[in-house]
Image (cartoon, rainbow, N blue to C red):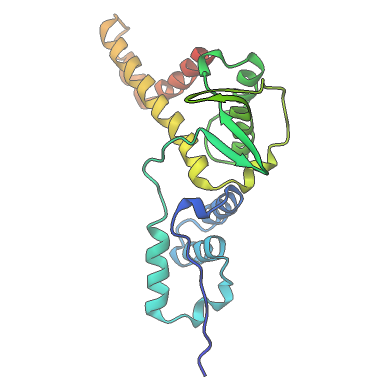
Length: 215
């Protein structure tokens, strides 16, 4: 007698929390290069599927699930979500990065990079704060006070997190293009541009410049 196995496959990143995503990344990194193990990790973390049951799936079912999950991986761009509700409270994205407080600036720059890792929830907790006032397209959020209750962002779906992350990726790209354009117009020591590009320091400089603009 065949046993029916029910599998709930997420259809978008809005079905995946940051906690699930981070747990998945740990396994994907640990099993890098092992396609079977990484596929099992996708099943386990994204579908809450008992990996001991994978061998009981038909080949067609296995390949179908794998295909659907692979379509979910590597988003190319996600729009920024300005407002997020958590526990009945509305949080808004920093409306004016050029006027961000020094405390918020200092806490963000305490992290070596801005990427979706174990520190990402803390970054989100700095950039998104409770909404005080909202009128049409204008809004005001509470001043940054060093709130350390960042764990709430672990349960927020990845469409919100990816939206914020892509916002900074696009900002970094724009700044890098401006820097490259500027470097063409100024006199530089021989080969400095090539050296910077090859070493990757030009990208890091664009990040530093962005933080100086925020400051």
